[in-house]
Image (cartoon, rainbow, N blue to C red):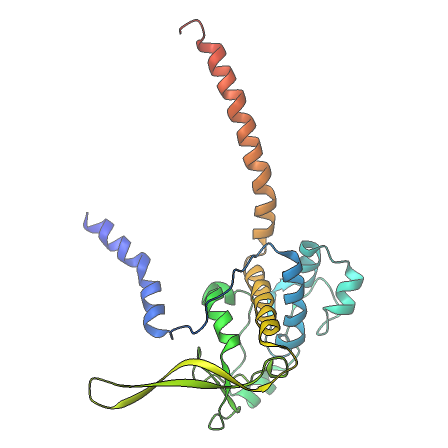
Length: 247
């Protein structure tokens, strides 16, 4: 009994640690359909244009993306391969590691499995909650990841926003400010609705990238269920045939 309790607690420890060290999320994440190929294609275009300049995704190969999404190699090379001309290579970063450390102070992490490490909800809120902060070395901050070292690379699409605070008094009688929302102060190229769709597509691609085999599992799953249904019918018919004299 004690062993079962310990195992149960251990299963929940990662989630408890994540919740303890995390920030409350401001936005409800829209439905992410990791099998929506059109959304994944749009997200891939956003990823290679805005993310791949600093972040790598070396565990995902261009060839795998092309095959999974039904994209020809010529179209892939022309529209989605800006950091490499070899389709069998991983999605390597365009920036040099030394330059990244000098500019940002840290080496930007590889994003191959970031959706599994951070969750789709966290990623959606992260991209949605950049705001201008003159006190930050990079000129921006993030409500989901305070103190972020990454600039807002999507600012031209989203525009600039500032946080909306709620002031409350803590147990010691001191006033504290909590970010409860975002206010757009300078529009970008996209409307708020269009930008939300852009982030949704980007997160969809990152969720696919973290587990590309899911597309194949969904395709095979239909045929497996169909086979099991046919097998059930045959097994039931055989059962009736074998036992008809008994009944």
